[in-house]
Length: 76
Image: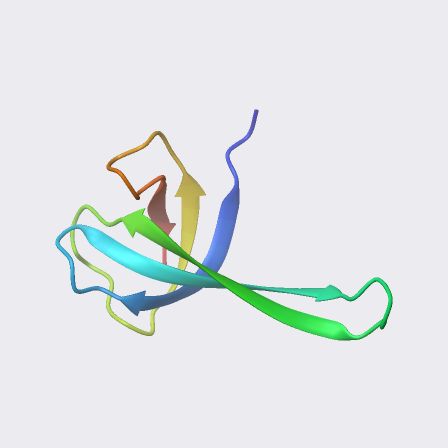
């Protein structure tokens, strides 16, 4: 099964080797037919601490690194 890849913006880089990435998705409401923006935060592993707040990054699913981290940063 292929690993999911998501694109988002780094919202926090305060922790060591971890970034918080906000991923936004847009979809049409089934009844109202209106475009809705929904966002979700993911904690991703950043080995080199190379990403800062505001950077556009791509994250990929991986085996659990800690209690909350199940994603790793692939590239900017």
